[in-house]
Length: 180
Image 1 (spheres, one colour):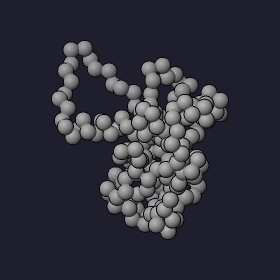
Image 2 (cartoon, helix red, strand yellow):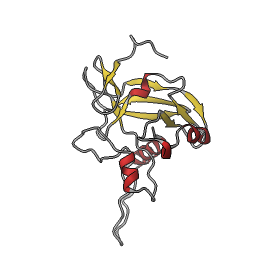
Image 3 (cartoon, rainbow, N blue to C red):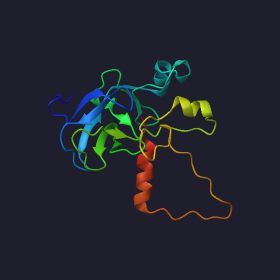
């Protein structure tokens, strides 16, 4: 775990949710900010530890690495667990191998709260109650009201899909691997 002096942010009370991470110095676009660490567990253990139906509000430190591995930052995790969600993020989480790194999407000024889009998995049977449970409090102008990934837009009958460039495919693959 990095010493606090090396981190480009500090933890303090957040207007988004509980505690948050705030830049203490300029963070340049593309800079690796921190690795998201914690105990590596499987999906069954994650479900056992965090039963959404028994929680009053959603609050976990889980991050899905792949189909078999979840990182629980509540156990052995570092300061990355305090980075909140935003619908207008200044960071992104990227899975590299079996590790999760947080990178700056743009230059971040001292004092700004650090945030990335959690993109929680959405299911076809999500209800209005689920939307409320996974409510977003980021306050961004483009806030979608939830930390869930936006619903897929339905295509009109007879419309064709645009060809996907290699770069867009890579982006979609990375987004599919990101979750918090």
